[in-house]
Image 1 (cartoon, rainbow, N blue to C red):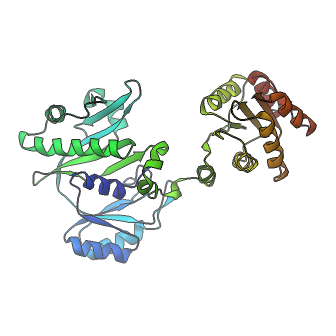
Image 2 (tube, helix red, strand yellow; image 1 turned 90 degrees about the vertical axis):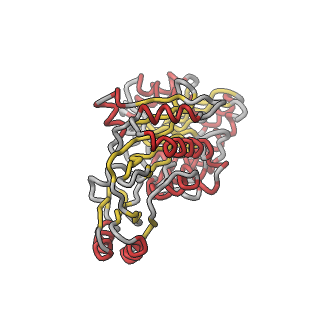
Image 3 (cartoon, rainbow, N blue to C red; image 1 turned 90 degrees about the horizontal axis):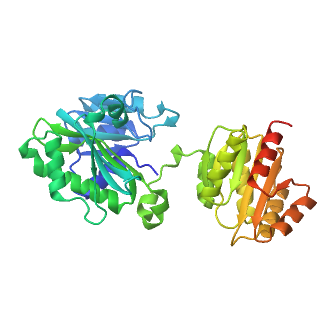
Length: 378
């Protein structure tokens, strides 16, 4: 789950990270009032959860209140990569003489947090990594020790910061790391961390991506979700507890278990077709959940066939079969499907489906071959 810049920076401020003075506006009049309160030049920044806002005209500088009003009117309602701007952040403009990138994420190979930093801030870190790997500094952090002061000081020196910035940088980096841990984030970053003309370090832009699996611990953060960035199918899946990712293939997949879902997608590709989605229906397969999953899959006009792959461990295959039939009775399905049931009461489950003339399979390979053939009209 991504947070907007203004939401991320407010969280940063809670951890002692200095940010520019500013506020959010949903109308041009509100933007002008904020500019009046701040005094002087301001920067008006569209708040949409995509990159490239500046290149799209969604970030502009204004020197007066009237100019703020005019620019805010231009940006509000603008479409940036398909997302409509319904709010802008109006921040006091700052004079920047240098820019640094600093972020915290998880290094899965090391199984620990890692700080990524670069003296080449202000541009996408992926672009820096592509052009100049040596410009990227990676600092793994001990799971038990956390970020230590000497590590933060050494990183400051490695970034070329002057001695009088060291204490500021240590405070900011420790605050960023603490925000990362306390919010169960998968990524926090400041880009850029500005070195201002009056010799301060200031987080003029920020980003936080939260781990969806930990949101139950953070209901306050879960409330910050912007549903505009989700498709209707993603929103529907999230509301009923289904893990769903849309892909570009033609075979819809409904599976219980993330690992089994990945294996199902792999074997569909092996037999010459492409999966249309990753969909993990989770434990159990009640009729309403099966119906929702099928509805999500069939909303994709590219889907030519559906493979249902269920492993009955705690879940009973006969109950799954009943759930599938109830779901099919409640909706119109015009594409072929194959069901593979393995596990508890699998024989009974296949008998129930056979009576309804729904093709079944006993192995994943058999199921994949059948569904690929049906999708190709064989």
